[in-house]
Length: 591
Image (cartoon, rainbow, N blue to C red; front, side, top):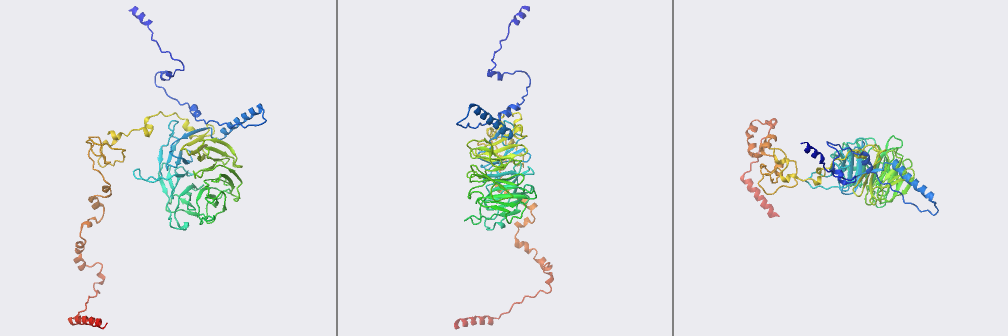
């Protein structure tokens, strides 16, 4: 025994020797027991860092090597300073649409983001539910989809904007005469009425008679919003009254051949420079720029500028500064102009900027929350951050190179810039030191473990295999689940949807046709509808039952029972009857 023990001690198991850089080391456990995965937040955020574009070196005739080195160092330091000044150093990309993203909005708290597209859908994104590996929308809503089964027309999304005072509702403007107020969960709260298109005077209409182009909210009243339409009107609505607008502003164009009408292309509603009443500024297709007092009356504009931009070009971008003194417009003539509301006659500054309103009329321009900068997109896919004093670019960074940048927004609480591009992408730009929550919070979470059920396009419909919750049929229960396809053949029963199931144990359920749903049974009619039994009676027999009673005890004619006149007929003799005939014949002979 001692020898065998000594022999066993001499045997040793040979272990595989792997190099340090061998990929198989990733599959070999380093320890036993349950291990916890902790996210490397710094690495995840670093992966979203945007590449810094160095400007192209400029050739100079007389430049020493030392001066070139100093210039390159200065340019790099300027890029680093600009990336630290603006929240543009990192980005999060969302690809949730099929066509161009035309509008983007965030609620005041910065927790929910909306994106609208030319595909006619609104996507809902919740920053609290997203992780670095699940960057997708949790809900997609078509504002004009009535029922999933019924065929309905979808209209491109023109503008989305949350209420400035609460994130419970938002304004949804589509290429349709009726704008909608929707809840943050996608339900329709108010659908404004459509006007009568046959009325010539727009003051008498209760709603827009043409397509609504854009809209915005009142700066102080959370119940008021304004919409601009192609019927040459601005309409102020109370979201609690959908029957008619609160006020209607009819703009009369002075352009030749317009018959006094034009299309209102953009509108902005902000506080005035005095702070006592808001100011309402709108742009028209004839190139006019008009300003009204925000609280009315709206019979005459406070100021009007003709040919503010080139006529017949779409001025889609307009915004008012935080103090209400400055108005910036981006026209379809390739110019950005700055206006003073106190001297609303000539632009203070103007600069050239390529326009994309011919392809995307909803291209906008925005002030930063503190009005220190102005942001807008370009046809080349670059984000331009402009100085509001001279409209010179403070920083230009590419977002989607070669693809137009349509919608931009700068959230005040999150300190993050949101952009929407023509390639159906939405970008959220942020800086880890300047920004709060939002995309920074999403990238700070641990990535979710991928599962096949996370992608709805890869899941399998198990109802075709008979493995579904509808296998148990409860009598009287409504089956609300819609099957994509039913089984064919077999001896199974018929489900409530009218399709044959492969499950042989499924009981037979009576098929409910649309006629049966619209026609209640006879018992229900007798119990719930008064006098329903009279439908099966003869009305003549039913009235004759009360003939004797009415004669003996008249209820309605009792007051005239004694004074009722006696019916008298004239008694005509035989001679009179003959004479009458002879008289007629004699008259005929005389004629």
